[in-house]
Image (cartoon, rainbow, N blue to C red; front, side, top):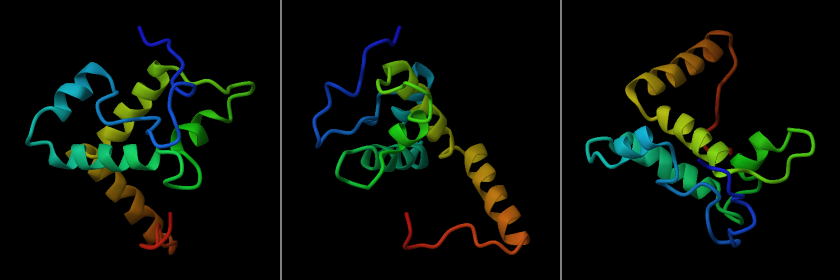
Length: 116
């Protein structure tokens, strides 16, 4: 299904995880014009996975800890993209809200607006 190496063919200005390279169900949701929040999440995900845009590329930061892993398959990237896209759904936003509320209830600010 997805076995191709995605790291070697991308140049420094392309995203390692472009919008639309996801699982079939997630792609169908992206094509629905009412899913604005999901699309926004994926556009930011694409930007953050562009070499030179940010320091560490999230796809590499997540998959790199696998011993001996230096090549990422299209399937791994698609699964990760679908998971990130889920955060833009109603349920995913609730999940993020619960994380923030839990951290703040323990007196730990979850994020600062100017940090990455």
